[in-house]
Length: 68
Image: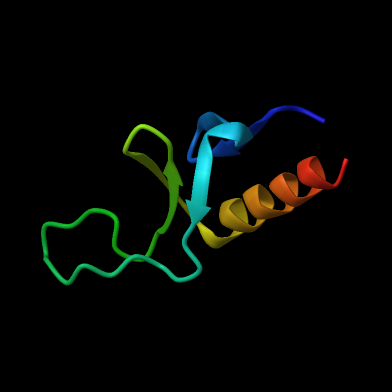
């Protein structure tokens, strides 16, 4: 199993993930480009934005990684 999961064309190391949003992002501002995407929060005050399938894949891969 790879240490990376692909999120929005980025290979994200699973060990950097702090949390995954359970609901899509809603900010309410017209200028927000992340409306409807799920946030995957990384260490270092960074985030990547995913669709629901990528979010679920990340959660599954982290669970499998921790169950080893």
